[in-house]
Image (tube, rainbow, N blue to C red; front, side):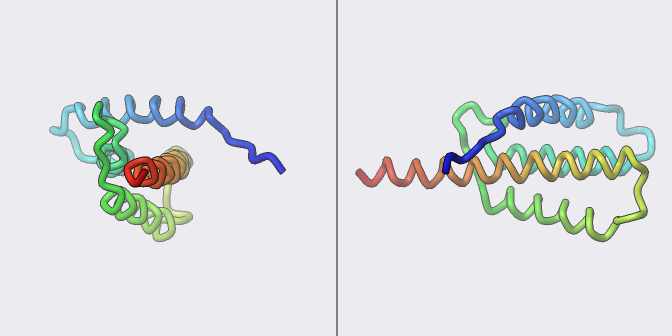
Length: 116
C-alpha cells in the first residue's frame, strides 16, 4: 500500500511563517490580541523546528513543548474563541504538527547517515 503525503502544507507553513513574522513586527503599543499571542508562540515553535534557520538548526524538545502548549490552549479555550481565532489556532497547530513530524523524520535520517 502506497502512503500518500500532502506536500502542500509546506506552502501553508511558509505563508504562516510570513504572517507570524509580520505579527511579530507589529506595533505592540496597542493591546495584545489572542491572534498575536498564537502567532508569537507559533513563530517560536517554527524557529525551534529550524524553519527560520539556514543551517537547519533545531530544538525538537522545545518545539514539541510549544506545540503542546498551543494544544492546551485549543482545548481550554474551546467554544470561547471567535471563528477567526479558532480557525487560526487549528491551522497553526496542524501545520506545526506536520512540520514537527517532518523535522523528527529528518533527525532520524541524519542520525542514520552519521552512523554509517
